[in-house]
Image (cartoon, rainbow, N blue to C red; front, side, top):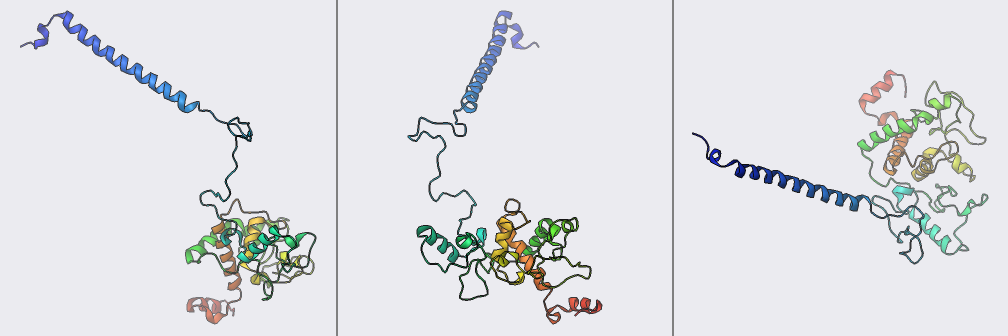
Length: 284
């Protein structure tokens, strides 16, 4: 049995097929037209090049200054210790100096023009009568995971100069670089080599504080001072602010404290397993 359509005249069947094709062509053409129109609007939007003038604003500038107090997402305020290492007391002095440069703020012994420098180690942190410049507590609790992270970051960024033990004898120093600071006041390895320190600065003492006439071992320097050195650099050490986020800087400092404590902890404080290892090595 033949299908019913076979009985229809050819003139009736063919126009039906042509109209379907024509419809498809019309729809396709419409889609192409719509897509090209969208592209023109999205891709060719007006914009200003850097420093290009603008007639829209009264000052003629296309680049608009940020409103006062605006910060980008995840940015820390300048007064937040996690991003500066400075105490709020130090920031209060900074604001007071900005408002009234003649105010008496217990100005320290000036060295060139550094007497108003914010964050400079111009006071002895061990003197209770002197203002506190740097924070002495970590801005967040340090867990075992934080210390392991600090050890990892220290190994990547610090050990190459300061050495795995923190004694200032890393691989770069062996190749003629400036002698890095040791975090210890005594030798921590039998293989440690005697290296010349700057004049009048004993082993393991802060060079930054020495500029202000303050002799202090690094194990007694505030952790905020470490943070400032990592952030801004010091001497031959460059700034690591771009490579190490603030939280990781604090973790590195925590690990440095662990290195310092490890050389001074009494043996009877150790767990039995570690005490037996010390005894086996003939150490006390």
